Image (tube, rainbow, N blue to C red):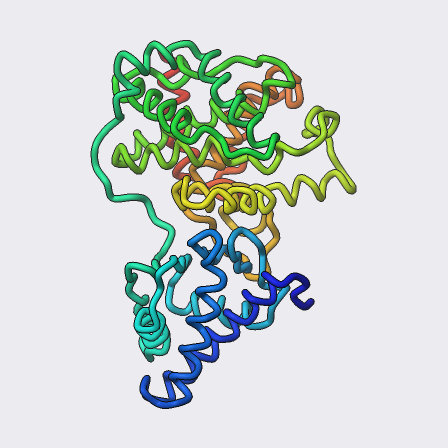
Length: 380
């Protein structure tokens, strides 16, 4: 494939220049005329691309390189080369910001050209790194206090907050990030106060409300697992937000498809397989409003612990631990709430179904942790 739009062509030329820049600066000194010409061209290209939005995020996820939310691996041959260089240096995202200078580009390329595998350093206008949990401390914010109880104390109100954000997404608007952050902080506060997660989950409210109910319940269980594992409050909140958005790629499915979700085949199955990639592409258009683990969990929550699942990857690998956690919470939420209502698997209990797949489809450690949580609920 070749770039089709002017913007795609500019990104293609930027990636070509970055790849060429690494090679050039590994052969010539930065003050060599060839190096200077290449750096000047890269600076002009970046200034053009950053003129409108001020940021240009490049994200590596599995076998795809996404530029500003659009997959480029199959669109531009230099994208494949730049992806390999990022993977070799253990880089998962690079974000160029308005105000970038030639010295910043030069330092970035020199870092990439080093013979060792150490990751490049971030600068003010070029952020480089891996997808990790935030290190910030602190517990739930003010929403977990009196204001949070007034707003989020009723499970139906919590589901409504999520449903309203999902409606905004369907209308082409971003979700209410601050509201959802407050909701997750409230749930975490309740769990830290030793509320059992099953006292917080929502019951079946019908097909129309199912996406929001499922997101809410998956977040409850994911937060419970993160708390049980000893995650810091900030890391637990990131997991809770990731769980809310893990199935955002399904929001644009037609109603009749959602109602048949458990019995699909043929062309409909392809929509199932595509929804993690569709969700990631959508979330990348929201900038840096969500933590990186939310993007990773959305993309990977149907990848199997022992390999396989979907999206189908050229190189099979194990998903990120955050994705594995959300996957277990996602499956149990569906089995506990929707399957009980729809009687999809009446001969099995949800925990038995999950236990059978521990170690193959799901991380056995997260399955065991959830089993302990379920056990305390039944004992209570």
